[in-house]
Image (cartoon, rainbow, N blue to C red; front, side, top):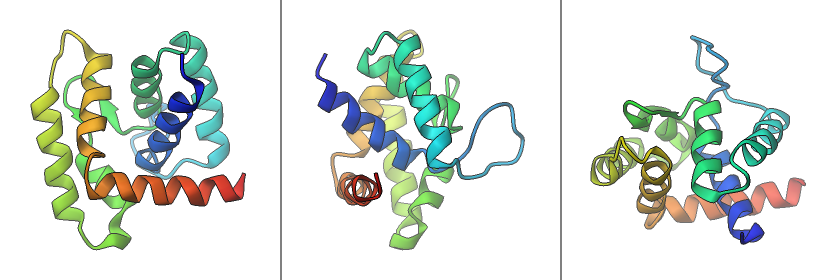
Length: 137
């Protein structure tokens, strides 16, 4: 297990995850860093630190993923509204969801769709966000 890669994935999820704490809340709200860290640690333990399972667990807890429809493109786009490319980002996320959709391998679907979506400009936003968060830590 490459811990650095997992940490990058998890930070990426945090950025994707600036969305909601899915504890069955009907109102979507941004999670605190504390909530993300707590959920991340729980997910690592639950998934035995397997990258794809950890990623899916985290984004699910944060309200950015459902096993039925994959990533919630609208919520992810709202996180990056400051880049003024919400519609484009939603198209990318939706494309990657469809391209990688595999309901019999949900962890792989989440991981591959994430990799697909972050392979372009969105990936640069993720890196930028992660570097800001590293400074705060």
